Length: 193
Image 1 (cartoon, rainbow, N blue to C red):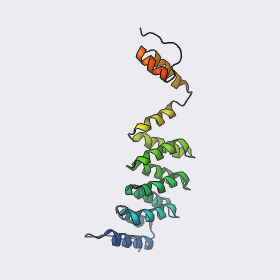
Image 2 (image 1 turned 60 degrees about the vertical axis):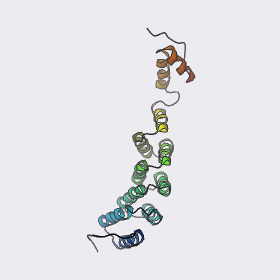
Image 3 (image 1 turned 120 degrees about the horizontal axis):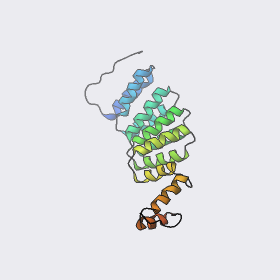
Image 4 (image 1 turned 180 degrees about the vertical axis):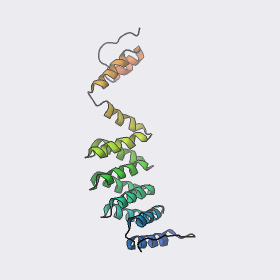
């Protein structure tokens, strides 16, 4: 089977459908049909067999194009097991491209821990590319704890802009001055003119 068109009509139960698709996947060698089969497997919402199969592909010796697809379809499962597998990939995979894809996929998860994972990666990933990717996708998420993380990159502790921002707050009004003092307002209050 060098190239094939797969057309399924009708309804099938998840287990037989997954079994059929996984067997086809192991028989077909060209990347393009395998890519399509991963999509067909990934749309199944029976996480029990789907997540381990996609994890084997992601962690295996497949071409990186296939492994990227496995990462994407793992994210479509949107379950804690998938997040755990993706987090391992975004921290330890041998390919930076797969690591970046795993970061993107984590960013698409609706799980609350996905935001925490991105925050951790933006601070602690061991490659600059993965940190940048995590920070970019973190900025796309609307979350309360995201703002403080991003602010830390813009104004790291002790950075002159962070000190200047506090000084500016002191010059606005007495109320703003008192609020800024809580955050360490430097110097005396300047009356607004």
